[in-house]
Length: 132
Image (cartoon, rainbow, N blue to C red; front, side, top):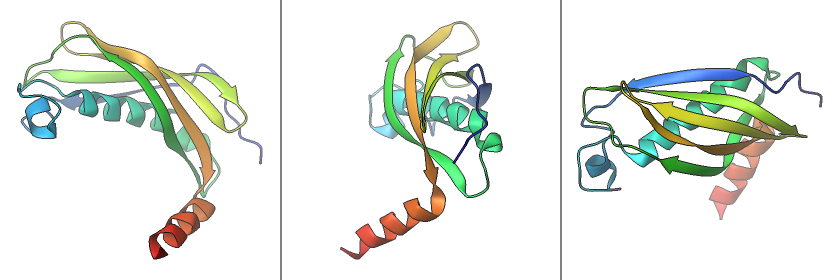
Protein backbone atom coordinates (compact mmCIF):
# COMPACT_ATOMS: atom_id res chain seq x y z
CA UNK A 1 0.00 0.00 0.00
CA UNK A 2 1.31 3.42 -0.97
CA UNK A 3 0.73 6.36 1.33
CA UNK A 4 0.79 9.93 0.05
CA UNK A 5 2.72 11.44 2.96
CA UNK A 6 5.60 13.88 2.88
CA UNK A 7 7.95 15.14 5.55
CA UNK A 8 7.15 18.64 6.72
CA UNK A 9 3.47 17.96 7.49
CA UNK A 10 2.46 19.80 10.67
CA UNK A 11 -0.50 20.11 12.99
CA UNK A 12 -1.23 21.93 16.24
CA UNK A 13 -3.62 20.97 19.02
CA UNK A 14 -4.64 22.98 22.07
CA UNK A 15 -6.25 22.47 25.43
CA UNK A 16 -6.85 24.49 28.55
CA UNK A 17 -5.23 23.38 31.78
CA UNK A 18 -8.02 22.38 34.18
CA UNK A 19 -8.32 20.37 37.36
CA UNK A 20 -8.88 17.31 35.13
CA UNK A 21 -5.49 17.30 33.37
CA UNK A 22 -3.10 18.21 36.18
CA UNK A 23 -0.45 15.97 37.72
CA UNK A 24 -2.34 15.48 40.97
CA UNK A 25 -5.37 14.16 39.01
CA UNK A 26 -3.29 11.81 36.80
CA UNK A 27 -1.32 10.49 39.75
CA UNK A 28 1.93 11.58 38.11
CA UNK A 29 2.67 14.15 40.81
CA UNK A 30 1.09 15.96 43.72
CA UNK A 31 0.92 19.51 42.35
CA UNK A 32 -1.99 21.02 40.40
CA UNK A 33 0.03 21.84 37.26
CA UNK A 34 -0.33 20.45 33.71
CA UNK A 35 0.65 16.80 33.78
CA UNK A 36 3.28 15.12 31.66
CA UNK A 37 0.80 12.40 30.54
CA UNK A 38 -1.63 15.11 29.35
CA UNK A 39 1.16 16.86 27.44
CA UNK A 40 2.23 13.60 25.79
CA UNK A 41 -1.39 12.91 24.82
CA UNK A 42 -1.72 16.36 23.28
CA UNK A 43 1.52 15.82 21.33
CA UNK A 44 0.32 12.40 20.14
CA UNK A 45 -2.98 13.94 19.07
CA UNK A 46 -1.19 16.57 17.00
CA UNK A 47 0.94 13.87 15.37
CA UNK A 48 -2.08 11.71 14.55
CA UNK A 49 -4.06 14.68 13.21
CA UNK A 50 -1.24 15.77 10.89
CA UNK A 51 -1.45 12.57 8.82
CA UNK A 52 -4.93 11.12 9.45
CA UNK A 53 -6.72 13.08 6.68
CA UNK A 54 -4.16 11.84 4.14
CA UNK A 55 -4.47 8.13 4.88
CA UNK A 56 -6.80 5.87 2.88
CA UNK A 57 -10.12 4.87 4.44
CA UNK A 58 -9.63 2.06 6.94
CA UNK A 59 -6.08 3.09 7.83
CA UNK A 60 -4.81 5.02 10.86
CA UNK A 61 -1.72 5.31 13.05
CA UNK A 62 -0.83 4.09 16.51
CA UNK A 63 1.82 5.41 18.86
CA UNK A 64 5.01 3.35 19.15
CA UNK A 65 7.32 5.44 21.28
CA UNK A 66 7.74 8.80 22.94
CA UNK A 67 10.96 10.47 24.04
CA UNK A 68 9.75 13.64 25.71
CA UNK A 69 11.20 16.27 28.03
CA UNK A 70 8.75 18.24 30.17
CA UNK A 71 10.62 21.54 30.57
CA UNK A 72 8.33 23.83 32.58
CA UNK A 73 5.21 23.78 34.76
CA UNK A 74 1.92 25.26 33.57
CA UNK A 75 -0.78 26.37 36.05
CA UNK A 76 -4.52 25.86 35.79
CA UNK A 77 -6.15 28.43 33.50
CA UNK A 78 -3.43 28.63 30.86
CA UNK A 79 -3.71 27.12 27.39
CA UNK A 80 -1.23 24.53 26.14
CA UNK A 81 -0.47 24.22 22.43
CA UNK A 82 1.27 21.14 21.00
CA UNK A 83 2.91 21.14 17.58
CA UNK A 84 3.93 18.05 15.63
CA UNK A 85 6.04 17.96 12.48
CA UNK A 86 6.56 14.80 10.43
CA UNK A 87 10.35 14.61 10.01
CA UNK A 88 11.01 11.03 8.84
CA UNK A 89 9.07 8.37 6.91
CA UNK A 90 10.49 4.82 6.99
CA UNK A 91 7.92 2.62 5.26
CA UNK A 92 4.95 2.64 7.65
CA UNK A 93 6.97 4.10 10.55
CA UNK A 94 6.54 7.85 11.02
CA UNK A 95 8.79 10.03 13.17
CA UNK A 96 7.59 13.39 14.50
CA UNK A 97 9.33 16.30 16.17
CA UNK A 98 6.95 17.46 18.89
CA UNK A 99 6.90 20.61 21.00
CA UNK A 100 4.50 22.11 23.54
CA UNK A 101 4.05 25.71 24.65
CA UNK A 102 1.92 27.43 27.26
CA UNK A 103 0.95 31.10 27.23
CA UNK A 104 4.45 32.11 28.39
CA UNK A 105 7.09 29.62 27.17
CA UNK A 106 8.07 26.30 25.64
CA UNK A 107 7.11 23.57 28.13
CA UNK A 108 8.01 20.37 26.29
CA UNK A 109 9.88 18.85 23.37
CA UNK A 110 10.86 15.51 21.96
CA UNK A 111 10.39 12.79 19.38
CA UNK A 112 7.30 10.68 18.84
CA UNK A 113 7.05 7.62 16.58
CA UNK A 114 3.83 6.27 15.10
CA UNK A 115 3.08 3.31 12.85
CA UNK A 116 0.53 3.19 10.02
CA UNK A 117 -1.96 0.36 10.54
CA UNK A 118 -4.78 -1.35 8.68
CA UNK A 119 -7.64 -0.85 11.16
CA UNK A 120 -9.46 -4.05 10.19
CA UNK A 121 -6.41 -6.23 10.82
CA UNK A 122 -5.51 -4.32 13.99
CA UNK A 123 -8.99 -4.71 15.50
CA UNK A 124 -9.10 -8.41 14.54
CA UNK A 125 -5.83 -8.97 16.44
CA UNK A 126 -7.19 -7.14 19.50
CA UNK A 127 -10.39 -9.19 19.45
CA UNK A 128 -8.38 -12.42 19.15
CA UNK A 129 -6.16 -11.38 22.04
CA UNK A 130 -9.19 -10.55 24.19
CA UNK A 131 -10.53 -14.10 23.74
CA UNK A 132 -7.51 -15.36 25.65
